[in-house]
Length: 56
Image 1 (cartoon, helix red, strand yellow):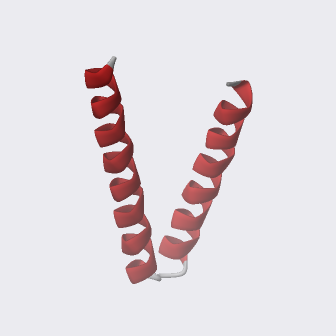
Image 2 (cartoon, rainbow, N blue to C red):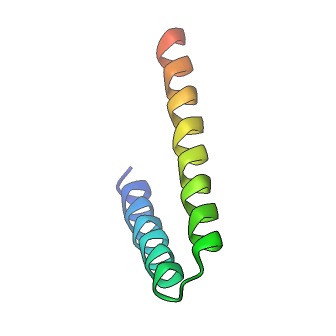
C-alpha cells in the first residue's frame, strides 16, 4: 500500500511539473489537454470506486 501512495505522489508531482512547464512556455493547448486527461482519469476512478462500494 505504501508503494502505491509513493507512486501516486511521484505521478502527481510530474503532472504538476508538466502543467507548469506548458503554461510557462505558453503551450496552452497542451496544458488544456493535460487538464482534460486528469479530469477524465479522476472521473474514471470515481466511477470505479462508486461501483466497488455498491458491490461491497
